[in-house]
Image (tube, rainbow, N blue to C red; front, side, top):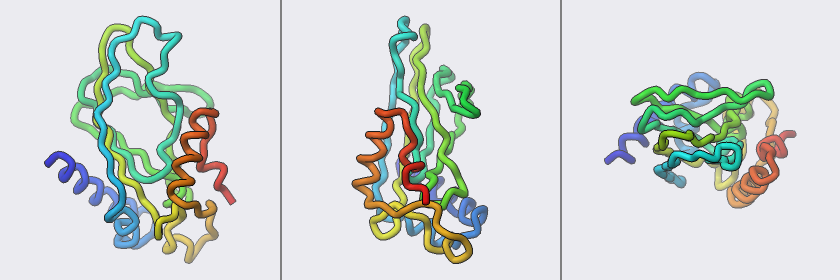
Length: 180
């Protein structure tokens, strides 16, 4: 039931996004319909060795649509802006949304983020990810390319996933390597 509810909220959000970027709602929703969805619960136990441990390394969620729900009020999520890391204060009951770069042709930019454990308290989140593709390819939506040039090269979904994991290990943004 929870997956159905969150998926419905994601579809509604896609409608707002389509209006914002000047695309047809149907085209954006179709990019996600019948595609892979995943949901995970992450728990980070308290950790006294903060200088030696990283909860999740810096990365971006450039593939589609990510919704993050904080189950508790323990901080840990940080976003990078202007070369500095900033903490994100958890808001009870609120979703944090991250949107991929490529599908929107750069209209939205995925935010680089990481998770730092807390020394005294555990942290729990629920993450919902929807993958958006066009004909099995990670590429800008065709409707957006009527009035603008593509900013990203299309790439097969499997190659995109491999490249993303490699880039995370190297500390890079994979979507930036696809820029035209």
